[in-house]
Length: 552
Image 1 (spheres, rainbow, N blue to C red):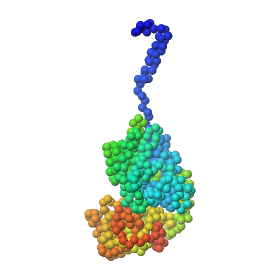
Image 2: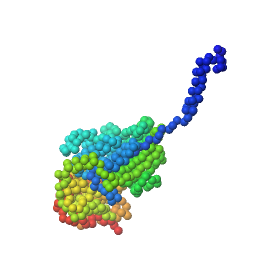
Image 3: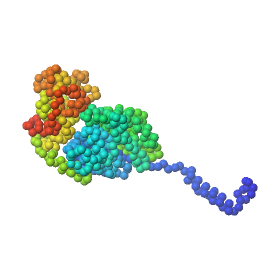
């Protein structure tokens, strides 16, 4: 057969094969030319609970309604998980300043509670400043497990550690500048990848005892987070969520995230410096409401949330991720109150709470005294409260000092009317801090008072005992205190006075660095013991009288 012979000249068997080949082309061509189907977007849910502070019992309220507590919160979170891939995120202060059911047991019950939820929902956590309350060795023990040198009775013995994954990009070992735990984690969600990066406020050293953060350094939040973004992008991941233990505030509202909201606080500057690929920031620390879109360094909107504190609410975040690009194409959140009236208690969490409560009951149920009405931290317009006066009076009495100070941030629970138990008083100041006295001059006492208006502004003001003062907040910072009297007599700048406080303040806590200049330190009882002793010696009313006056 000559080259180029027509099909008709080919053998019959070749004609049949050729015909089948043409038919095959006709059949399959429409399929080959059609557009490929785009994979369905992936729906991801994140339930974020910030600043839980070991609040296993439901003793808090929100908007005038009982809210929070482990049994209630667990029920809400379990119901919210739904069908989508769901993560629980804990952006710091999971423990610390905890009620006795958790605090007296080294917060193991709280970590066991969150670990129980991690069985069904992958849980990711970062450090808050309170995670360091018992030092770095104890922090790592509570994460990794084991009883170590502890002397408490353990709910689970030996203590098993946590099932949450802790991440932190900006807490590093001083000796080698490496993170004390993984800086980030990448998780799979129905075939797409999502990265979580952790960071804690750089202000932690100023609000912690120096011994608790010895050997570690708190690096800049923005630089530490951005450092790992290229590494994450190289792995093909572009859905990036930050667990940030720093925050701000805004006016609260109901419903889904709104645009154009005014957010204030350190979180705004941090978000503004973050890499353009950052999508979501789960904030914390300020115990406020946040649900807004803020711009990152690339001018792209970042969803920023914070859900009050103590498990009274949670942030319910919905994300949609494009499986081809890995980008988050939709992000919205709602801050959901965890009202006790809105759900039934979770049985497993209830059993854990009761077990912890029974373990500490012999200590906590001891009746110390009784009061005819509530003693609360509700402050007047000068910042003075009945509870603050009561607690600071107890510390001055314990050290027989001329003057005493507390930071109002140390007041964590009110004292209810009726019989007052040891547990009630522990809950007021659940830090197990030592009360001490030091010698300061009258001028140094004035400097301490003026530090309430220094820059950066301390997170809490001071309650005082043994002195009264007047301030004028229209005057320049550093010159706002117009009069100080000690036991009714004008203070003498060069005279020495004995001053009582807890060791946290003595080391410059909350930014009150003048206390670090104190001389002749004498250590006394624990803060709760000072309060117990003071309460047993009182008759009602107590802690009254105007001590702080705002100039008209």
